Each structure stands twice: as C-alpha cells, then as structure tokens.
Image (cartoon, protein in one colour):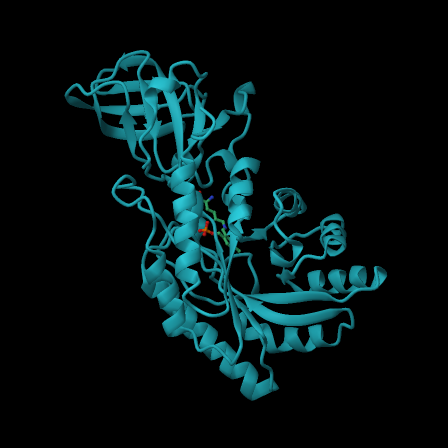
Length: 385
Ligand code: LLP
C-alpha cells in the first residue's frame, strides 16, 4: 500500500498529484466500518479537503455524505452522485445565489453561522415555498491543540455563534416561519490528534444540551460535531489510516445523546490526506555558502501548506538511495516562503531525481493556485497509470 510506481512516473510531466486509490478505498472502508459500530452516526466527507471529481466519485460510491462550504462544493458533491439528503452546507458568508441553489437542490441542512444568514435563508425559503432545515453553528469556546491558523472554536474566530448567545438566537430563529431548527453544529479545528480535545468538545455539547433543555425545554434531533481528526504527517507510511476506532469511540463514550439523536461528522483530511502525494522533479541542486538547496519544479502554488502553516510533509527521493545529506527543499516561485523543508535529510540528490512529497491528499490540490503564471498540476489516480 502506498508504494509509488516510480517506473511509470518518468513519462509524466512533473509536478503532479498522484492518488493511491487502494489506500483511499481502504480508508473510506475503515471510516464506514468504525462509524457503523454506533447507531445514528453519519459521516459527511468535507469536500474542501479535496474536490478532485474522480476522488469524489469514489467517496460517493462508498456511501459517504458531503460537507460543503460553497455553492461550488454543493455542485461538485451532487455531480459526484452524492444524494442531496446527505449534504450539509456550512460557511460564514453564504450568498443569496448559493442559498437559492442549495434550496432548489433540496440539501439536508444549512449550518447557519449568524442571525442575518438565518433571516436570508428564511426569506429565500419562503420565496420558493419551502421550509429549510437548519442547524445553528455554535462556537463552543474550546481550544484545539493545533496550528493557530486552523483552530476555529474560539471566540476570536469568525465561525459560528458564541454559545453564550445561543438561547437568544434560538428564540429569534424559532420565530422564522420558513426555518426548521433540527440541530446544532460544532467544529473546533483541524489536524487534531489529541482525543482530549474532542472530549472537551463533547463536554461543552453536553452542557449546552442540558442548558437548552432546562431553560427552553428544547431537544434537537441532530448534532453535528464537525471534523478535525488529524493524520500522521511524520510517519505516513507506518500510519496510512488514522485511528477511526478511537475517534468514534471517544464521541460514543463522551457525548450524552438524547434518545434517537443522530450524530454527524465532517471528516476531510483523515479521509484523503494520506492517499495523495505531490511528485516533483529536481531542477537543480545548488550549493550555497552554508546550505545545499534542492530546487524542485513544484512550488508553494502547488502545495501551500508548508509556506502557510509551516506544515511538515515527509519527502523521499524516489530515484536515489545514496547516503543522506541535509538540504533545503525549495520551489521556483519568487517568494522566500516557497520552501517545502529546511535542513531535511534526503538521499544524496542530483538534477533529474524524482521526489515524493507525502501526505498531500488533503488541502493540497484543493488549495493550488496559479501564481507566477504556473499551470495547475495534473492529477493521476493509481488506477489510471
Ligand atoms: N467542518 C468544518 C466546519 C470545517 O471548517 C472543516 C475544515 C472541516 C469540517 C474538515 O476538517 P478536517 O476533518 O479536514 O480537519 N487548509 C488547512 C485546513 C483547513 C481546515 C478548514 N476547515 C490545512 O491545510 O491544514
């Protein structure tokens, strides 16, 4: 599993994304098996992590739902054959056009992030003579142990409605004729490996449920706890599939579910992260005064995570097994932050070698851009080459 067919890579123009379909299918099977151990657990794939249509089709065929954050993502999910009844739509800035489109498609639920948004959905649902099902996204004030740029559950973040304001907001929403409040939505951040963070979220959800019940006599049929389960960026080959068993057991044990209450998950990275590799070729090896630079043909525009979050990705030289040396692995973009790794030990590297930048399946291709007039990298599935 995750063995790269480097003999087939020589003919392909680099850089490109390569996806191991077998690993993706095994990962999806593991998510479904582990979530399936608990009644009423539903998994929606977070499309933002990777919207490559061929991957979406595999994910859809396996039966996962979708978590979307734009009209484009709703369209991509529908295009891949995901049933509207399994689609949830979050995001702080849903536009009128996106809301109309999603209402017409008949998606399962809008995760509403503010009162003005609730008002707009109410108005637009009224215009098309329907009732929109909504969950309120609650900012739970729970810190996740992850990079500051990808934590979302704190008062200082723009997401959701502060849990202290919830009763007032619910009271307002209940007055809106064309909305049906079916649940609460939470998401505390991404690349979370400490189950304690999810336990803290469960505790907060439990408190909120108790408060709504005692103060307002309210019980809701759905809870959506978001995504965020991390992957092993340091040892991707040893741990290609995240520990979904532990993750779902944490929620099953810690969440005080009301009778019949359904629990929804929005997992992105943990599903597609490890199946993707960015394959790049060495253009030059440059000897500086104090460093050696491996200059590759992929840049931060192809994989922005190292530049944006100082994220670590394993890098292997697929065409050399000579003694390792320390290199800075950098791209060709005119930005000092166009660096994939600093002082990284790599088998002695020369011009023309092929490098694999691992764990690039999530937020890699999906966040690529065309800076410096660069063409977006191609993507190949293992089943195609
Ligand atoms: N649900 C909501 C409401 C989210 O905001 C996110 C991710 C997810 C689910 C999926 O989270 P996951 O299971 O993938 O952790 N570009 C960053 C990550 C941004 C995550 C944004 N929200 C990165 O490359 O690390």
